[in-house]
Length: 203
Image 1 (tube, rainbow, N blue to C red):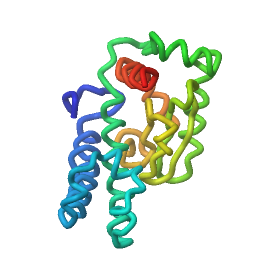
Image 2: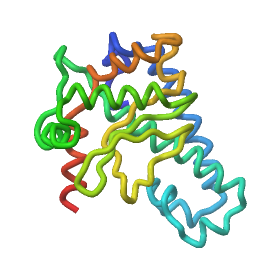
Image 3: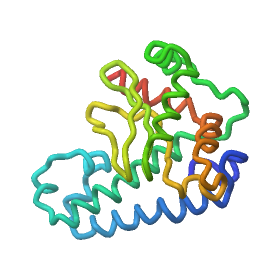
Image 4: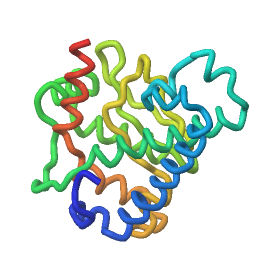
């Protein structure tokens, strides 16, 4: 983790982060590594390349290996972005700033409208999955994905995501996904979101 296990209190406690990071996320890492161990040529590819490449090597893999890369690679990618998108907030009003704030105003009108739409996507994701803020051709968009799927990141560049798998919040909130999402906004690491946006805009 890029912070201590108690850094996100009272939003998420140490037990939740230990289970989520050290058990669930680690399982995706271990299973992906176990799959890649049989394919040295794939070990030279980045995680993004593994998940988006249409390389003949990937296409020629057995279905079980392709499925493992899709599911476990997606699990690694999504969790890395999720954990890096949070930090300890010293402010009750944890708002975006800089270019990301300007883009949110441009695309959604007001920050509260953006919050409402992202929350609606997170609540509307049936079962397990994620709600995302992505950058697409100069604009911001909110999308959702089931399970460990990722958006088509060749065009929809991830800026931020909310993990709505139950293991992300159940120890703290039980079935109250609504309360977890409301609390999540107070720990968003807007500096990281700003950095991602800037890197996409420079390309």
